[in-house]
Length: 455
Ligand SMILES: C[S@@+](CC[C@H](N)C(=O)[O-])C[C@H]1O[C@@H](n2cnc3c(N)ncnc32)[C@H](O)[C@@H]1O
Image (cartoon, rainbow, N blue to C red; front, top):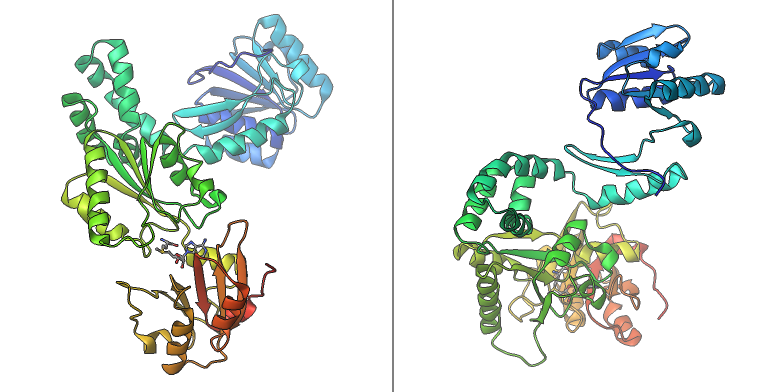
């Protein structure tokens, strides 16, 4: 380790920037954000620096650097385009025992600016010890994606309740366990979203009865490719104690669950009847686990609220007073359209999109006239076995047999396929291609843009 990361409390501390160009301006902005008491010395400061400093009441002295400028400063930045001046600043700082950063010159710096991920009051600094600022920037981009923007709100909330918990729980080890538990509970989400009342209620419940605040997350697992999980879905999977998943959820997605999470397949088995009983069983399991304080994930393919009985589960959880959240996922319509190159809407061809299931309550029961309308895109879910009937009924309801249609099978999975045709011939083409489920069909002029993919 050739550097030690520490955080400087610069508020009200005397700092100096030598230089007045674009690089100096970026450092000035950082020091202002840290509330430093700042002076700028530059022979010919640029407009941007003058404007910025003017707005923030920062003194800019237009003159050459003088070694005595560094005396009494906590931190000095050398950001001129003159290597000799920068070296002079470094030497002066060394003589006065002042921390100095010479921009892009690790060898002339006793302080190096890390790449910063800012979620005030949380900051993450990434340093390569001056070896590669570009690598540090790349790492920062990755961390930016991982840390929610709401982290600052959460940190603010935790800070504001710290004393209260210290009083209620004097033992430090107990307190640490308590915070670990509540951070993994609903509290984190509530406080992040600024729902302080809700967060306080969870805090109070945890104090009164530790481990009592479980949460059910209805999570959309997307069409299959784990790369299409949302960051929030991934976070839920990685924090889950137990995951109840449907058959449709891909192995790749399931592999993203926390290693020691219990995984329960609650998908329907072939020939299994009594789907109401099955659903009641799942509902009861979700509630029982949440009441035991577990983090429960109900993981569904696609979006959890599109053709998935998610609505019934939400209603049940609300009725049972169990905290829950819904994390959306990429629904099959979007995924299938994307991989087939079909725009779901089109300025000239489709001003609306209609999602239908070919099998509501096990029956082929649709408003066919509505579904056959022109100038819209029709997306048919769960239609593999009844594809021929669906196409026939659409034509019988007035749709042109030449209307373009495309069937997309196993979208985003390694064996995905697209078969394109028209309402008149799609079913036979799909049969010939021996397409497997899950399969979604897109009907409408937009489907003319789809092309067959090789088997
Ligand atoms: C019970 S529904 C679930 C829909 C899911 N909640 C969604 O938002 O995509 C199952 C149907 O979704 C469609 N589907 C799901 N994943 C698919 C995929 N990877 N490729 C094509 N269709 C898919 C098929 O029409 C399948 O019969």
